[in-house]
Image 1 (cartoon, rainbow, N blue to C red):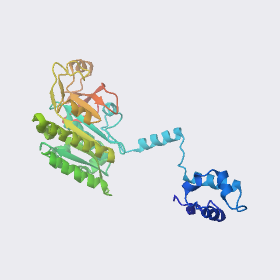
Image 2: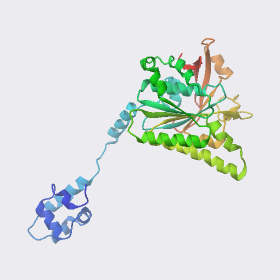
Image 3: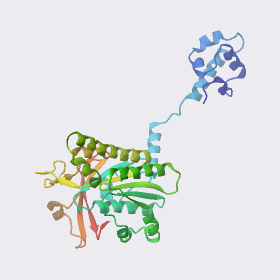
Image 4: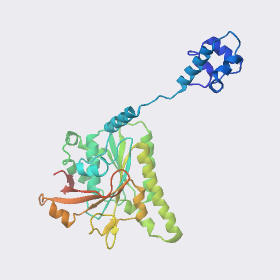
Length: 347
């Protein structure tokens, strides 16, 4: 409301407003800064009562006050809001649980690093997450930044069959149209795509981007980190700035950002992994791990996991997903998942 007392003529009698004006009291700060008794003594005699002055001050304070909330009611409202938020999930309960229940949700974005060796299932998992979300949410779209030129749209069509949702069967063309492929062989290409994404998100469009995939961040940033000395330092800053831009978009618009990262050697073993025979780690250096919300490591199953799990069939390959580091869930946890003919499947 306005700071002028005249805006409160519905709760302060006109005669009292005129009396306040005679004392050059025309704004709220002037009124509430004077004790009621002192104010009453300054007013013309007989124009009002001390009780009326106190009521006027109390009414103005109540009108200015912010709404109060009970803690339990506020927590319940927040829980209901989160339950109703649009979540990005892969549909494999164990995998979703590793990241705190989802890979991101509307109003609460995440930057998820999915790292691993070639053939570990990074692109397969990212594509599964995208297709699962687009088939369930016809108003959602995806920006896929292809940094290597290896994305083949024709290979996506057979994968839709792995999603049994009716939307996948009836509207697979719509799903494909909502995967916006952008080639980004240079960092400037990626920045251009992100700028266009920001513009799209600011517009009132029917279909909104909900997922961003960078496949792979290694091909985009890795060549910049090979330089040494001061030039290497400035190029390292490019990596940090790019990831901060992704985080800003994720937090500002509630996006799920999947950043795929390759691997490098970690000898004699990777101390972050709970499996002692892990001799690989995410590429791009140790500082990169702190630029995302979660680092999810994908790998072939260690022997002890393979021996403990039941064999499915010759067409189904087992993979292990392990949380190396997380700001949104517990680290040091893992689960198995399965890939059949290039698609993540529930068994």
